[in-house]
Length: 174
Image 1: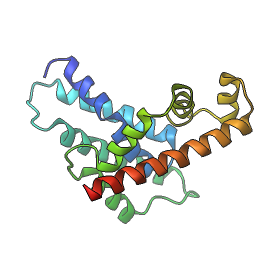
Image 2: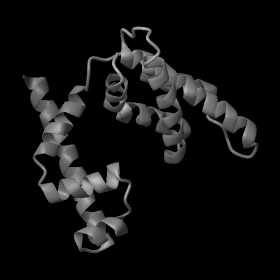
Image 3: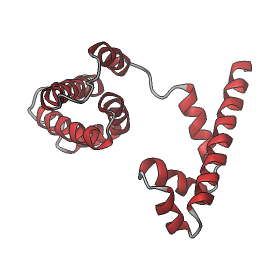
């Protein structure tokens, strides 16, 4: 692998890795921290010269090990916090490590439905769910009230849900 490829591959799967880490750590900052630690190990390992046949599977295992290391470290530091049950960790990890052939039909349907959403609403969705902006922050950016943003996003989520359900029903009949 050349120097640019491991980073591109890592970024390709970043969302998937962060989703797994959020499920494990239940804390966005902690998930980011673990992802960054894993990224260092992944990039160093990928540029070490040893050929990697399945980057995604290899990187997933590194992310899983970094998450386990983080949980063990947290368990030693926080006596009053309830740690993640090891069985739950294993169940989440098994689902994460399971190979798939790309996005599922639900994800594909959601992407098609998102393509139909007007740009201003897509921007609000991105601010809320990718940027983790509050309703107040979004309202300030788009020039409305926090309540209006909350209602708009609620209606948009419902419309997307209905669109995905319709698309899946249509696909089942085909």
